[in-house]
Length: 260
Image (tube, rainbow, N blue to C red; front, side, top):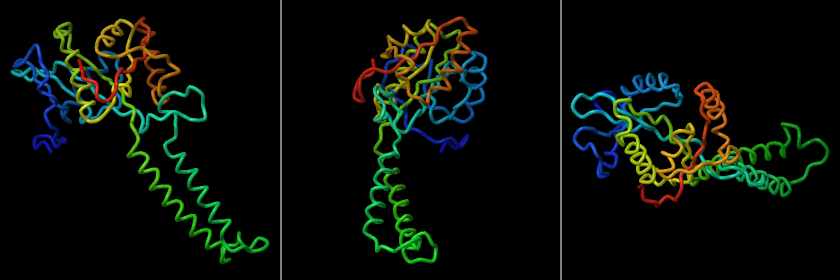
């Protein structure tokens, strides 16, 4: 942990990437002391100040003064990118990672029920009957098996992510700092085993072309993970006030794609 503020320590975030301002700017992972100025700037820019966690942020500061220049984060949207198999053309993230485990548990319990010693009448429903106790024990075993299966499925699943809270101070805009932040965040994401195609964002129409140049493409609302629904609704309200159209985008390429 960082001895200064107790935040979790991280390895240097891809310092090998070229920078037009090498020596003048430094890029590092977020620390807890960054969260208040980040939230303040997001509110000032009418951006979402929620879902902020220091360990998800990359921060850019001036090397000499320590002044905050910009920041961005990649946060998890869903534990799995699986689509709902019961729906045609279902969006990523709509599947229930626990459903196969539920199905397996019911199948196991049905087999155990059929193989257990039969009792007549309502005896199996009475808590003092031998069959009731046997089935209760089997149910407890199935609950534990389901918990283990769901845990394994979540561990093996490929999550969905959102690139969010990308901000650069006015005096540094148009000088490549924002592009550098996004490139480093995407490279960090890929370095940890993530896939760019599982990375989403929402933005306004004027910045859509900028993100396209950084490897993102537009997607329709119905193709977004359902976990983004609330944020899209809030973004639409803000975009209406600002007089701009909200655009949803998704990363292109796979886990091994090099960041441009």
